[in-house]
Length: 286
Image 1: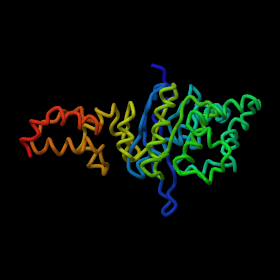
Image 2 (image 1 turned 120 degrees about the vertical axis):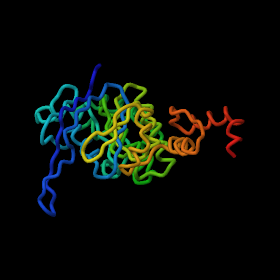
Image 3 (image 1 turned 90 degrees about the vertical axis):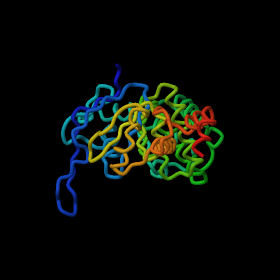
Image 4 (image 1 turned 135 degrees about the vertical axis):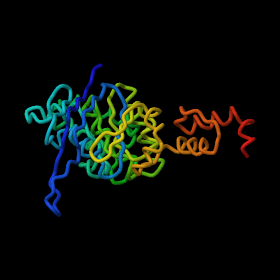
């Protein structure tokens, strides 16, 4: 297995301002992220998921344990630039990442800082804007774009640096359903082209689209597996205050009422297909 990220017994501590107490935001986590995979990390606010994400990009450094990105230890300051080229990061609010008054200039900002030749920058900007379906907007001012379009520009700015992995920290949290769908389509497209995706999200339907789901609670990983494996633990997930995808929730409630529903239902499409194919049987419950 070729792992692009290796997390070994990671601990991240900080001192709480109000009482100076030491808090372990990430508490002894060990995870390997396979190159080319799509991993979703979910958890309540304060579970440690965003802190974990920032440790993967060397925005935060471990208090204990180690994080390796493409074999580079994030604690090695001489490797920070290499790490951030390998693992780009997209944040929740795109306005915090947009730095120029013209879309194409914003996308060019990262490659320019890498010292890339102008002709190569032009190629990267065009490639990145096409990748997120925003080439036609390249001459516009970012503030004139919708939230979903701004987030796509922020993603294009990361793609232009040609990272092997993109870490997205709740990129759809501030978007409407249409904007969320736009961003998820781009994420799937980039992943299909071989880019490793780490998606931090609190939307269960987004997590269900990943290859692998990790649920965090109190700085620890408590569930880790495919969406089917993880979302079978409905009661355990609910106990920590999280929801499950709508289709999983509906199937769970139907089973409690005696309706026979297979436990491999994960999406609304799966549930609709199953109910349609067994419509005569379901009529008996009406």
